[in-house]
Amino acid sequence: MKELKRIPLIIISLLFFIPILFSLIKSLAFRESLLTLRQYWQLFVNNYPYFKYFWNSVFYSVINAALCAIISLPVGFFFAKIKFRGKNILFFLYMLTMMLPLQSTMLSSYILLRELKLLDTPLALILPMVFSPQAVFLYRQFIKVIPDDTLDSARLETSSAIKILRHVIIPEIKPAIITLFILIFCESWNMVEQAIIFTANKPEVMPLSVKLSELPDNVVFAGSVVYMFPIIVLFLLFENEIEKGVKYYRW
Image (cartoon, rainbow, N blue to C red; front, side, top):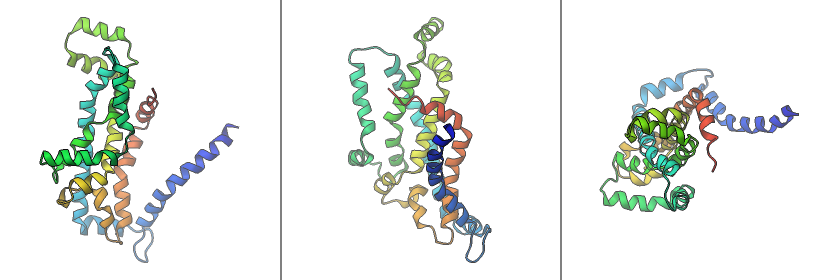
C-alpha cells in the first residue's frame, strides 16, 4: 500500500526532472554530432563573457547569503527569547512582509536605492536581499525550542550576548544556518527582476540569470547545465541539513 502511495510522488518528481535531463542530453549534442563535449568547449573557450556573469552570480549569492545569515540571527533570537508586551503582534506584522510578492516592494526599494545613489552598483543587488523576513522566521523557529534553562546556565558563565550566541545558540541551530544560506543563495542565484530594474544602465554588474538568454544557440544548453550545477551540488552536499531546516517552517 505504501508503494502505491509513492507512485504519484515519483511521477511528479520525474516531471520536474525531465527538463534537467533534456538540457543535459542536448548539451552533449553539437550540430550533427551526439555525445560530444563540443558545446562545453565552445562555451569555455569562446564565450568569455559567460564566466564574467557567472562569477557575478557567485559573488552576489555568497555575499547575500552570508550577510543575511549573520544579520538575521540576533533578530531571530530577539523574537524567540526576549519577552515584551506585543511581541506576537509585532512578529505577525513582520511576517506579513514575507507574504508580499516581490513586485509589490520593488518600487519602494528602487526609490530608496535611487536616493542613496546605489542604482547600477553591486550594492543595489545586495542590500535588498540581506534583510529577509524568511530568515528571521527560520531562526526564530529553531531558537525558540532551545530550553530557557540552557540559556540561564550560559548566563551564569558569561554576560556576553556574543559569547552566548557563539557557544550556545549557533551550535544548536547549524541546520537552520545551512538551510538559510542555501535558500538565500538560490534566491540570489535566480534573481532577474531586481537586476533588470536596479542595474539597467550597467549590464556588466548583472548576474548570469539575466544574461543566460543571450547565449548563442550553439552553446545554450551547455550554459544552462553549468548554470544549474552550483544549486545541484549544494543540495546534494547538504540534503540532510535542508530537510532538518525545512521541517521548522511552521508556527
